[in-house]
Structure formats: C-alpha cells, structure tokens
Length: 257
Length: 261
Image 1 (tube, rainbow over the protein chains, first blue to last red):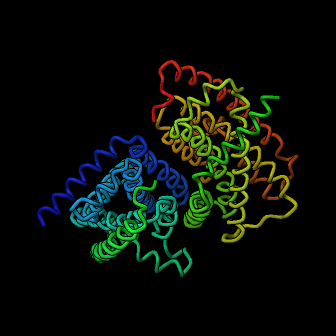
Image 2: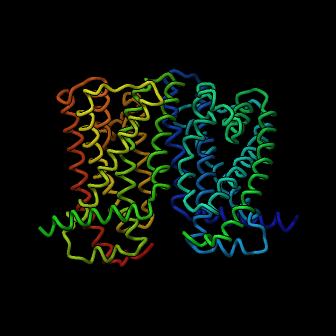
Image 3: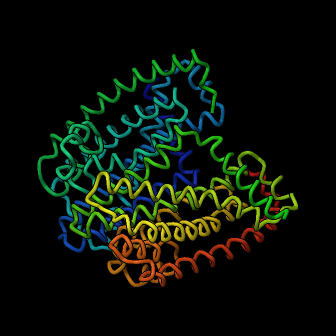
C-alpha cells in the first residue's frame, strides 16, 4: 500500500514538472480558461446580476479544470509513445494503473490553477464578488472534484493504450463535456436524452459541489456523487487498463506512434 | 513556369503529407467534431444568457472554424516539416518561396471552406437556423475571402515555426484570440474600445459581419465594403508573413535552428 502511494506521489510530481516545462501545457492552464471566462462574462453581464456572474465564473473555472485533465490524459500516453518509454513503463513491475493515477491527478491539480485564475480574473476585471457561503465545504468540494476528474482522466487515457488515435477523440471532448456538464448553460436547457450523460460526468457534480458551497445550498450530496463517481471511474479504469494493455501486448502496437 | 510547378506540385504533396497522418479517424473528430460541438456550446450559452439568437452564434462560429484550417493547418505544415526533419531540405532548395508557401495555402483554404459549410449544416440540423438558397453564393464568397485572410494570418504564425519550436502554443493563442476579439460570440459593441480597435485589424471580424448580413438576406453588394476590408486585411497579413518568412529563414540559417524539434 505504501509502495503504491509512493508511486502515485512520484508520478504526480513528475507529471507536474513535465507540464510546467511544456509551453503548450502552461498556456493551456494559464490563458485558455481566462479567454473562455471573458467570453462568458461579456455574454452574461448584459442581463445577469452578481450571483449569475459568480455562477458563470465557477463554471468557467471548471472548464479549465476539465481541459487540463483531458489534455493531460490525452497527452501523457502519446508523449510516452513518442519518447519510446511506454513499453518500459508497462513492462515495469509497478501496475500501469498506478502510474496513470499519479499523472492524471497531476493534470487535474494543474487545472486548479485555472480555478484560481478565473476567479481572480472575474474579480479584478469584471467585479465578480467572491464570498463563500460554506468555506469548509468549499475546501472539501475542491479535492473531491479534482479526484473525480482525475480518475475520469484515467478512463480516457486507458483508451489510448490500445487506440493510438484516441487522442483525437480526447481533443474533441472538451466542448461536449463543457456543454453536457452544464458549466456555462444549465443542464435543463439541453435535450432530455443528454441528462443521463450529464449525471454520469464528474464535472457536473464537481461544479455543482463548488457552486453550492460558494453560492449556498447543500453541496454534500454533490460531493458524495463526486466520490462515488471517482470509485466507479477507478473500477472502469482498472478493467480498461488491464484489458487494453493485454490486447496492445498481443497486437504489438504499444510502440506504434 | 517553374514557380507554377512548385506551387501546384508542392501544394498537392504537402496536403497529401498532411493527410498521411491525418487519417479519417483523426480528421472526423478533430476537424468536424470540434466545430460541431463548438457551435452547439456557444449557441446554448446564447440561449441561457439571452444574448442574441442561434443564427448569431451559428454564423459567427461557422465562419470562425475556418481558422482551424487556416491557423492550425499552416502551423502543422511548417511544424510537420520540422518534426519530419525535412524543413532544412525544403529551405535549402532554390524554389521560389512565394510559390512554395502559396501552394501549401490553397488546399488549406479549400479545407477551411468545407469546415465552414459543415458548420452551417450543423446549425440547420440541430439549431434554430435557416438559410435561404438565394444567399448561398454570396455566403460562399464571404466564407472564401475570410478563409483566405485567416490562412494569411496563419502564415504569420507559421513563420514563427521556422524559428521557434513551440509553434502550437502560438497557433492555439491565435485561434482562441480570434474567438474572443472578432465578434464571433460576443457582439462587438459589448467589447471594450481597446478590444474593438484590435478586432479591426484582425481577420474574421469583417468577414463574420458580412456573413451575418448575408445570412439575414443581404446581397453581396450590400456587404462589399466589409468583404473588401476583410480581403485587404488578408493581403496585408500575406505580405507581412512573406517578409517574416524570409527574416526567420535567414535567422534560422544563421542560428542553425531548423533541425531543433
């Protein structure tokens, strides 16, 4: 158990360092959320009050969190492929899932910066107030959201083990998840058939938990959903990684980039 | 004559090479899935915020996605040469630079127009948006001129790729910058004056305005000023890109940076 936790910690630190060295990763974390937040502020400030703008600000912050998770998930395995280290990582005695947990959690951790940057951007440039209705629950909802998003990232990353073009699908999933999770437009506006998809997504519950702890409400249920979904993603990720890894070994496609 | 050959053969080969790795399994989610969900995302924000109609967001984003081909396509054309370590071979050749890079631009403009057409189809299929058949020729003109000016703008980014390695950082910044500044999703009168001033010299701004008027039933004659303005901006960026290419090519030779990747 201690060995596993140590490996997760090392993977987390290494991935954080790698992302900090990549110009694209830094830009993705620093600039992208601010641009989308600005578009949202310009659109909503015409008709919305302070509370609406704060709702928007928190949604935009989660957009950055999801973008970072998705990019990290899509890029980690691609990067290992191009650097020809994927086979070594998978062949090592440490389960590959453990390695993926560390890197995926690091990507969502970087996304936390988006949250801070977006809220600060909203406060400084658009005068969006930031008063926490439940500070303690806010502190609880953030790690729960990061955990659930990070583990959802593992499910995405697992597909890349087998399908080397899955990164294209991962790149495409930014907008649909932002939309389905109700980050800038309420889920109620979406067609009914989208709602079950929305409720199966970590960003939906993560954003709800954070919004209810900031704006007021009962975030405990949403926090619980984040943790429950995290457990489900971990189980799915475990089976995906195990099966896709075996298939990729059989087909000898691991090193193909 | 040799310039024409470089233009045609170089362009075709470059585009085929681009699709050597961009198979349908990559093209469909990246080039079609991206625009599809971008349009839906902003249209639903528009509905939630009560700002503007679906048509505003469909036209704005269907035109803006041409930048995906223009900006990212050019970045990939130059960046791809660097990754495959053929950039120095291309640049050591005596080929006319203007023909060389214009050849690479033309297929990207066609690709951008296809993406834009797909964007309008998405709007008609999934949102509250209609287009009268009579406006299609004028709309096509708006799309082609805007795509060309976006591609010219993309060559400014591409020229940076001759010197710097992280070209996709610049391409991504340019793409989302156009999304914010050019009145694609935010009406121009909602933007601060300094942002409106910047939007005046960026590609897309006038093309999007023209396309919105045309989609609303306007004729090509009623938007000719906007189209000419958009074309002039494109020509300006094309000239600037050409000189930047030459400058960065010289700097790349001097500092031996072509093979860095």
